[in-house]
Image (cartoon, rainbow, N blue to C red; front, side, top):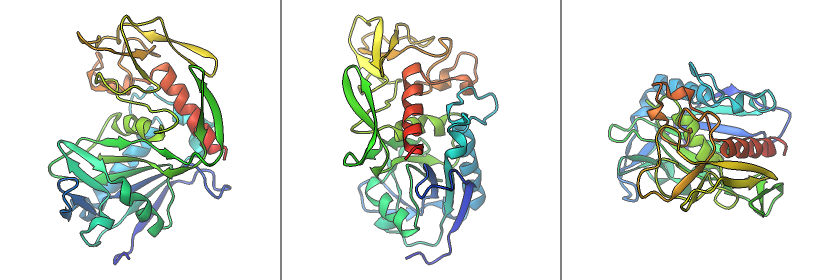
Length: 302
């Protein structure tokens, strides 16, 4: 059990009238597994820097709710969505350096959430999450990463169709979507990783678009690129034939959905390469935005 009193901060109340409102939980990582899979645990310095943790938690909230300077992707700020989201942060310190207290591992240049211990950690502090962020202050790795949600496919959800296949925006999860993020993260990093984490292993993945890999709701493979990307809930979405100003590299097989703003990369693509020099101007492509909106709305409605 914890040997130091945790600091729980409700950043946004959300729908307090529900026993399980849609919840985003942000936790200071107690210890790092260095490297991932080694069983070697070291102190994460974030546990001695609550100011940095609190600043990162506020940054995550701002990025999700469209409050960054110049931010144009505002789907979670919709009055039907934003006020319903509960956001809590938990700052913990003084825990033993052991498996059960390590939410993040280091792998190559990535921070990686340790999915096998997250649920137990949340339960210990009587927390729940639809998406969970673990904040690290690793001196070695600063690049964030995420795991998709493991849906509870034995419980209800809202059915949707994708290219003739029926899938579900499930109300509940077995393991929440998880993000390992560095305390120094900025711009759209928190929102990009949220796109991965809110999506699902069994009911639709939102994948990275800056690599020629990973078929998902927002990415397909094949050449020539067809005019039609997908049919989602009886609406037809066109393909992005040129990948905005970035272009598809020679030899790529991946192709993407049409963009909301064809002058800028999609958020799940390399938004750092925004030609106007302002990554916060980037938005999701059309199918990614609608998929994420529908998934949040389904969970809010439970």
